[in-house]
Image 1 (spheres, rainbow, N blue to C red):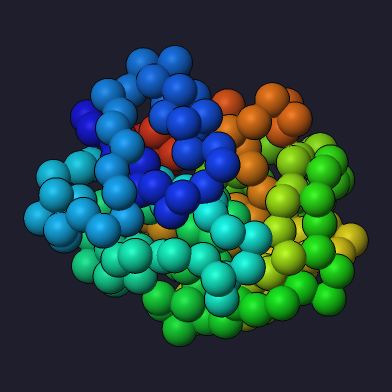
Image 2: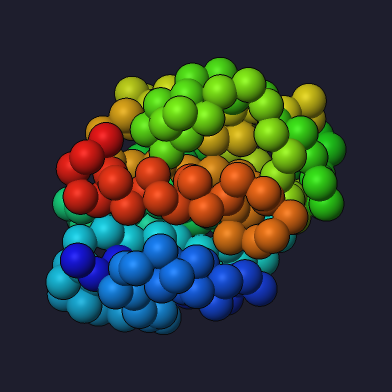
Length: 187
């Protein structure tokens, strides 16, 4: 099994790589300008975060990857917003940006949040957010200031506004473990 981490020039891209590697997965980082054929060799992809504003973010070909890749996808922060835009949802300026520790409330402990009920502390670093999920997506978690902290199509595409790859998100490894299970067809 191979998971590719698409680098949207986020500050935590290498942490995503290390977390997946430490969970026993073959993983590579690729630039967001890679040809689609390079992306299609993976069993799953993770779209990293990037600039704190979607309008200033260099998404490269991430929109194309979301539309064309047929395997499981996890979008983190800017990658979460890219998923929304690629599939007909909306992303834009948050009424209140979030930076630092934030408590989120899990509305649906399924998919990427399988087995993770209640609430948890996560690390945020964003000024934009998903305003409207794509058609067919469900909202999985929210916070006081952000209505869509996590979303998914409940099949193969998921996004989280926060950063599960950093130690400031204590249960972040569980999210990556759930993604690995989704790639393997176990969830």
